[in-house]
Image (cartoon, rainbow, N blue to C red):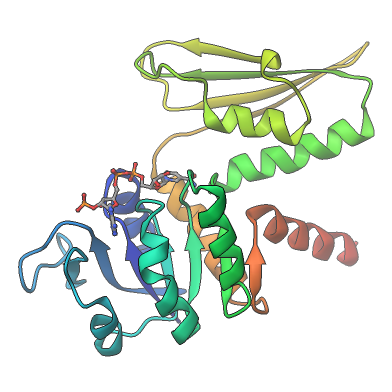
Length: 248
Ligand SMILES: NC(=O)c1ccc[n+]([C@@H]2O[C@H](COP(=O)([O-])OP(=O)(O)OC[C@H]3O[C@@H](n4cnc5c(N)ncnc54)[C@H](OP(=O)(O)O)[C@@H]3O)[C@@H](O)[C@H]2O)c1
């Protein structure tokens, strides 16, 4: 069983904690947030400690509560705080942080010389699968028209980062993205391939934030089988695909 420490207990982190707790491959040993927590505080309905990292001796905490892996759903800066501990202890890292700067990403890559790391700005299995399938279809049918449709709740003002990532991976400009804002849609992404005599639609719908936990759990399970290095979610999926093709 892989012992895990979760960094970040906000909107995403709290949903991810639920998924990790329910997965028999993992033991969620503790959860860390930034704000100080009361001594002995635990996650609601469990014995799992909830700690606040601000002003805390994290290294001492890790000595007393060692884990095999960290899962990060906090903020980009926290990587620099716990990075030396990853390096020293060889803990694995699954980071879902969406907005690392280039220097932060360089640092993450450098940690790959000492341990196993996955950084994934899009961590749902479904979106990563959609991107992989869309890239494959685009390479098979470069002549097809391609458009991206994204739909979200009406309060979301900016174009979806995921839609921009899909466009980038298909080498499409942002003018190929159509955004609709209506009601309470959590997240809908669609890649539409227009062939002369047929249409192919690849669609992903987000239902709940727990999907981030499913992706993190997949990444962690795979990473445990890897050698030291820095990996993307696409690397993990491509390995699965190659294994599948080798069986057939
Ligand atoms: N890759 C993906 O698909 C994906 C999906 C969802 C979210 N994310 C990423 O996950 C992160 C969290 O998103 P969210 O919506 O859950 O945000 P959020 O609700 O604001 O939660 C952020 C959490 O991080 C904690 N935190 C802040 N600074 C910290 C530090 N220096 N050290 C440790 N913990 C710290 C906060 O602590 P307090 O509770 O004490 O404030 C809070 O628990 C973001 O970076 C986002 O990009 C990625």
